[in-house]
Length: 478
Image 1: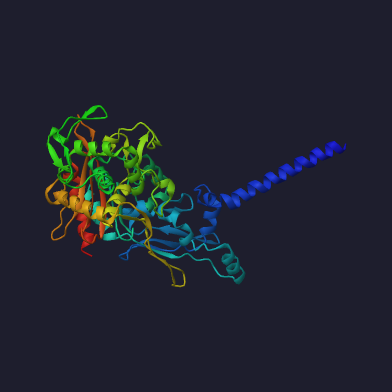
Image 2: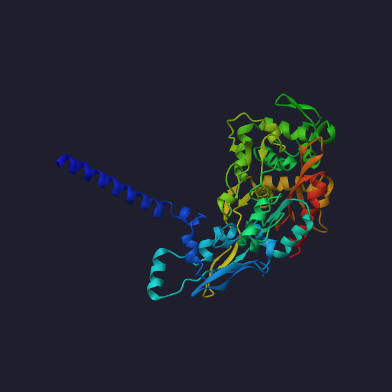
């Protein structure tokens, strides 16, 4: 009898421990993930009774606000987005029946006025109503409009960053979507079924071959490691064996012995592939990691809405120990896949004297009593290359815009540093992924940019360069 009681008592203790353990896990250890789960409607129901803070652009345009609604005797607030599809991708949406996404999710605590637990308990005892804080974004609405106008009907993406602060000034993914339509069941279904995936944020979620835009990373590694200088010469003939397979230059053009400066200006594939082979996979990966490859970008944005850039096998990132054709990685080929955000971070780091700042959307936060509780505070992510290397590479990239493949990105009276990329997606059909990355003005950069256009017949210089030029013009005129 006693043995049975002991066994029953032990079972009760085990079950009690399991209950305590799981309760502790969900309420403490994994509380944030549970709260951010779009299926968790309890929190959404509670928050629907709170007047959520507004979202405004840096140039003063209202992006999101909460309107009071009545459901029986219960008042609740519903989100509306006055600018429609202009900022659908970065801002996302917040609806009771649909959950949260984008900035509405990543800055949910701020917008909902959620404070530290101890402070919240005191305010509840005092009868203080919870109210959200207003957020001013770093995004410039005028430049955002320019990006969409410049893209026109082309599917692609534009992202611009202020190099010295990491402030995201433009995030445009085409086609866009209007978050107001998400709240409608039929509208949401239509967006999900749309052929061109308008709900996909191509800036942070789409992975593309970068083509020759990757040569900026290769040049940074070559110069900063001390293995090469801008005047180092390498054979630029077409058909040079790389990993045992002949590599061709664009159009089959041969250049003979050529300096690294001229090789970047003319985007000579064989030169940069040989440079990468000399540096080795470990060195190339070291500099890729410094620029932010192989990791989720450090942006204040939902992690599940961002993708790392790197060399992929299916959906798996390959490390430096894998069998990789590093020569072709160095020119944006092989299995290298990148996001536009990553390539903007590359341009930003070079433009900022070699220091990569954490990208951010937050210009300022104002609480319900009008007090500024947070504002843009530049945060350095890493020192990628030396200041001297960055200045040298900036000069080399300036040549690309002045006399090379990137002349279409030139600005009147303002020096631009850049690099084009043309990844050949379907050679027989003449289908390319067009790129331009760069920054301006060269001496004191106000904007770093990455532009990509999907499945175009043109080159990066012809297609992406003019788009970058128009957006940079707006942001450097301010």
